[in-house]
Image (tube, rainbow, N blue to C red):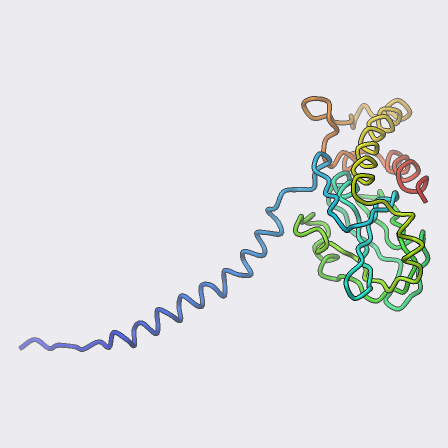
Length: 230
């Protein structure tokens, strides 16, 4: 005589629920990873200039948070030009920083660019998460890419030296046009037969154009677009 087995349907449902919950717990960090590494790369044609963010002509930015603290980062224009880089910091938490102080250095295969502070203040913290992922060139929410958090000392005075809104739009368009001239001059000045300046269809400058260019041209860029604006 055949045997019959009774299965508690509600007990098996519990196992199914546990499996579903486990799947979602595993999916959340995986989705975050995809969001970071598969987002669109920074592009010279789509430089972000969000409302409420102040930009310095050395290609850094400052954002005043509601608590009166200022986040500082590197703008999309600079990020789009360099390609993957490592970041060397020159300041530590607790240090007093003057506007124009050397904060960090972007480095790539023996080439480098110096980055300066857009504001004066005390450095409270460093965004180690952003530093760890800096070379991945993520394009999440703009202010997630902040590098330094500072307590400003002369914000009311120094914010007048920064640019925002329509003025920032006009400035970045001028920077893109000037970049073409500077690179064309560098192409004539240095022997670039082995590393031509790449243009996209329509004559636009290729993203990550500095990545393949010589240390001399990085220095030209440093002088013309960063140091000259201090």
